[in-house]
Image (cartoon, rainbow, N blue to C red; front, side, top):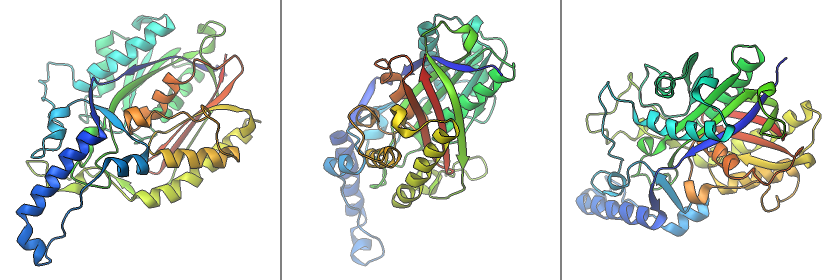
Amino acid sequence: MAKAVISATGLFTPPEVIDNDELVESFNTYVTQYNERNRDAIERGELTALEPSASAFIEKASGIKRRHVMDKEGILDPERMCPSLTQRSNEEYGIQCDMSLVAAREALESAGLSSADVDAVIVACSNLERPYPAVAIEVQDALGIEGYAYDMNVACSSATFGIQAAVDAISNGQARAVLVVSPEICSAHLNFRDRDSHFIFGDACTAVLVQHEDDVAPGQGFDILGTRLKTKFSNNIRNNFGFLNRADESGIGQPDKLFVQQGRKVFKEVSPLVASLIGEHLGSLGLSAEQLRRMWLHQANLNMNELIARRVLGRDPSEGEAPTILDEYANTSSAGSIIAFHQHHSDLGSGDLGIICSFGAGYSIGNVVVRKR
């Protein structure tokens, strides 16, 4: 059976940045205005006064200091508090396509390939701008790639599930090179009026080029030793927006149509599942946690990542063993673990082992065990 290699990665980072202080200032202005508008109802006990947020609370709870976004002005406007992204005509490439092109071209350039060398495009992300035509087919068209393309969504695990699909395509001879792209505009699905989650997400796009091992130069990239996927149904992370249950015309006032989660339950339930799956996966490959040089974990919460790494390794991880990009990017859903991999792999030597692991709504967990060539 043909083996697959991650030969290159690419990253698109939106230029606009919101730090915690800016986000808190906007949120607290909204809180003050809300409490003032509803003072009488609050005093009568009909409504509960909103509580302000704080930068120290955000960083302690998540490890996040700032986030990159596609539109800063709309998010920070207390009267709007959501991004203002211009709807494009059907004759124009979409915004997720534009994001994907930047990341994909960086990956292709890094691998020394052109679009003609790619057989398939998988757009794997948690938030898609439309049901069809597939964003992946749009990206395929924009890059001039022959072959096929499709979208897939497994929430925050979409990128690792996409890598699994790429490995399968290479193993069964369907493709020699597959682009897995994750254009995440998470800010469009975040409720910036919710104190417990208004700080969580940022926007970004990653690209992973997966190739047949015979087409990759010796010493380039990472051999994919194995993948492991797991899902278990849970409502603790949910987004109800869709054509069967649309928001009102303003898109405001129906928070269940946006991102919602039971954070403490997620932390308690997902952390042991992830650690256990990593251990089982390594064991099935004849490997042990002691052999891991790097863990590129899903970037949702710093405390969660530290707990998972500690459970897997049986000790506190040393600096660099489980790198984080949360402080700069916040949670970028499926792109997070790939950003960590993209930015923190160049120091590894031939034979070094690592694992890319994502986890999120579903629940869903995806592992990709790799070895530096």
